[in-house]
Length: 257
Image (cartoon, rainbow, N blue to C red; front, side, top):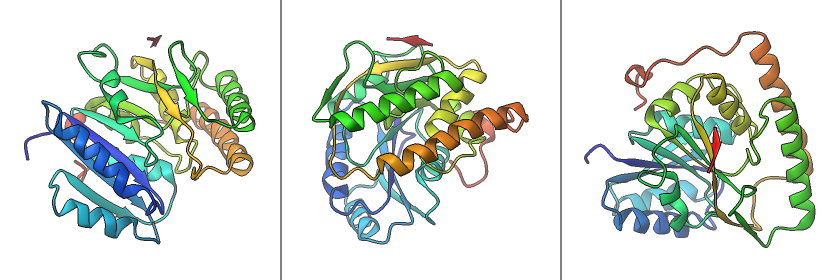
């Protein structure tokens, strides 16, 4: 297959109930585009039929690939996918497709060609949320307030599961990522700003999914601990600048808009 323009990275942990439909929609979207694309599913130690379903679909779609790793968390799965991807642009895409595939062009040239990192946002002007419970929304806003106060001033929505990186940005950022859990988003965006990369929030339509893997109370506290660890790691000088895109590890392939 030719070098893809877009790689879509789908972290997956026990997603057998929806992985087939989501992958079919992503593959159909890529088929309708003028560019070459690939989909990488990174199974984070799934114990259900996620891997089997993905492999069976991949038999008919050579641009679909499964990567299996032990269960370490979403952050680790995303890191593996970003560093294995070959695309000039690399899109993190949650398996629930809470953002419709029709929104993907908003993250790519020619619509968006002047940024290194484009992050889906449910909070900037033009964004729309659908069906989200009020308590879940309030907890998300509280967490983001902490994030903005501690590490990411000005970023209105750091946790949306749809983010796009240029190949160079993906390699530089994910090569030094340390957090394996849900707090990886904050860490990667902090590193992007620290490196002087251009970051933009992209308004999207977002639909709440009832089968979310996030447990609001428990995971919010874990993510808050991750936020503090980002600041601590930075103070200790634990983040090194990653290698260039041409020096990927062997085996791996700000403005609001």
